[in-house]
Image (cartoon, rainbow, N blue to C red):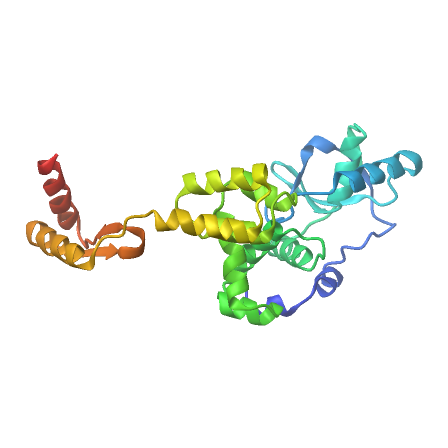
Length: 276
């Protein structure tokens, strides 16, 4: 997908592909269980109250506009109308009025991304997923994406960094149980156990972001960092024994062995097998 595509907005995309409802099209009643959401759809959370309100409206007045789907080998992929689909399921209906159209995969991917990135009610996690999808599908850099959407590069990098957090924390952010600030602090912590522990404290003790930052720093201060002289000695000794260059990540206390061939790797493994 070319970079220029990102310059289009959702209105341009919809006009090009005639996604508006056409009264002359055939409307089918499809099994709701055979309709599935586009996997490239970043939006994961919907306001249950508004879905229930829509369900009541559909109950009283019927479904005024069919959903639009694309037929696939596994059923029907939703192109437009996820809130309507959810509302119909709330009512317990077995079928939903649908229009089946042919769309190529590139259009569906682009639609899902552009539709969601322009939503005002997108949660931080859904926004992060949308940006990640853009980077993958449009094959552009963080810098280029930031320039295109009027954000800073650090904003893009930080928000995408949230996605490495455990699912339950991502869900808590999306539901507003913790803030984006809380999540950003947690995303900077490498130790998953510490992340889980601090998250539980945020929920139980209602920690502010500032207090969380202090706690995260106190955990960080407990890590025993190795002296450079000691690191140099270990690097030299191990390098002689396995005939390889050894690297250290001092801030994370990581020891890294580099190898280029299978023989190099076997030499490293042979050495550690002997000392075991």
